[in-house]
Length: 324
Image: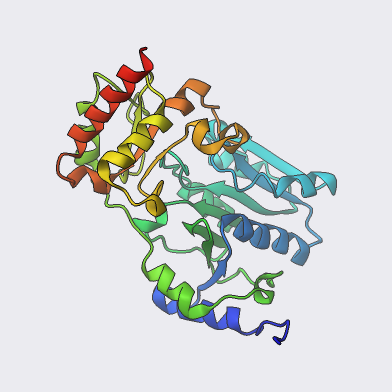
């Protein structure tokens, strides 16, 4: 027999332990969630309920999938949703000054979950804080390399893995939690998982040189200089199937099947099975050909002996087989 209850204080205690682990300032706080979608829901939906007298918010779209499931409810409830495509947000001052007076928060992302492209929205965050509008921003990977000082009205939601995310909260964020305390958390296991989170090394020269070395057989994702994280190589092999290439590469590298896709991945639909994984949110929308051909390589592989040689040999094998 087991009581169908969870200790309600467990989540709060875990948050206090995480605050120590992440070495947060005394006036900041941290909250842990069961993945990024859960974090966005709790932070966004919770704040809307807590400040129900305000009926508008802004969202910068085209950078992350994690805002999409939050929006239908607000449209249905006739909130003043103020969307802007990230490509159109060239003048933060003008956009923020045009937000409705009852705007509660703005959702935006610091980086891209696939390509690692960086979006410089520090000025946006500053302007929102000046107007006492909450700045809810997502970091998929950037937080691993840049620890930012939190302004009072800022909440930085950070991806840890597919099962865990944390929100670092500025001192003015006091929204009550929704369902997180009612969940089972196993603090010791989670703390151990957080300590072991894999962080890829950043090395701009190594990544750029590796991408250039494949110029004859693969194109880099970024055709022009772009602010990005240099924790990954992005190559498009347009004349082979990237998933077939990746599976063969796993074999040649003798990667444990339980570790597949952790440090080598692809956007090929044989891997993901559904266009919506990418096309429902990504702007500008990637072509089917680009998705099918993209290989994403953790920078840690670049110092592995003969990795480049093995990758080229694998490519040649797959190309020969596809040419029948």
